[in-house]
Length: 331
Length: 238
Image 1 (cartoon, rainbow over the protein chains, first blue to last red):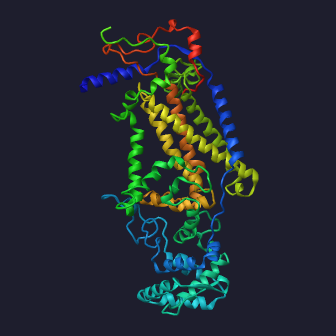
Image 2 (cartoon, each protein chain N blue to C red):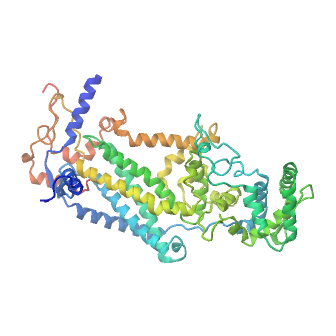
């Protein structure tokens, strides 16, 4: 078929579909909408009564510090040392990385740091400075602050290494490690551990410029750097490699509509060569697919699928029974 | 008839609105005879599910974000809210597939398809902000994981999934407003253009004039009321 005749056929198809001049049947729009609402309420009530909805209690820093003090202190030390995932994340939290990119596009970097987080200051030093009645802790923080960066790194490196064989003592309220060149770090970390176990750190980490609080960015990102959320998520099949983004706690359906988005995280090259920039790559793919979805009526080939695979004959089978057979060739 | 003439803006808007969508077209008491399939039900079911979502969400919003965690009644309404969202997406997806296979953009209905598709895409972050506003472990995990995708494309600098207050505002006001506005525009466009007619059955008369319901099918008068009755399954047009 030539381009001109395709254009003509398309025009004819559109003209045919423009205004309906055929028969109508009686119909009650309001009645049908009312019935539909009743049906949905019925379905939802049945699902609610049968399955309820999930509500797993949130993890707290206090709970984390009590149940896994070694992981808590290891994470806190990495925040102090600036070696945690968040410390090197880049925008929108800090300038310690450029963030993800695709080709020459670096929107993460371009949009800049909007929620500044200094992991050492915000997660360790400032909370420790809020502890009253512990002169040893305050002295340790002062020693840390006065030390040159190179020495701080040596202390945290050595302490991080020692944490590999750390043992909780005094009922888990402190960690014992092999002696080494750790400087004031053990004192600081054991103090932070006790503070967290008492619940103080949960409050201290909430953005605090006013009395009322609604921003949990800091405690959430601190928790996310540790293993507490990940362990629970793994048990609930919520990790990225477990199609986690579309799953929900328990056996509930979750956000099944995100299946295509989650799908890309399961396959190559998003899991291999593109892994470092997987998020922006997936978002780019989904952005293109979403645009294509919106613009289907304008995309040759895609918009012709319904005509070429005539499921419409099934949809309108009742109607087609009432119309005459089309003329055959040569008839 | 209005006594006001000339440059009255209100009269102009009214005349334009009524001209585009007269009352009998806005709230019709008849539909084309081809609107006869269960697939048509999914459009009105999508709207019905949206009504239930907004109703249950309004009760949850009236009582505050923490209420459902410590009361049985609150948990009940949270369950209603969650399941109505699940139903909404299910019926909306079926509706979209149905409209795809009908090529419902034909005959100048591109905007009908576009508003429907955008509604689906806006409903996704609307649901996501709900998931991260739950104040439970689910919210903690989803927000800390999904933030990376938002940050990677720069959205994270002004749309912070770990900021409960911001997400709650988006969830109960901004995004639902967008969804309702889009659904409203979508429905008005459907009412303006009508439900897309069936494909013309293949014919060798390629040069025949493109009309429907008159020359290519039997005349209206030839279809008996009995045929119409038996060929119609009650279904919503959307």
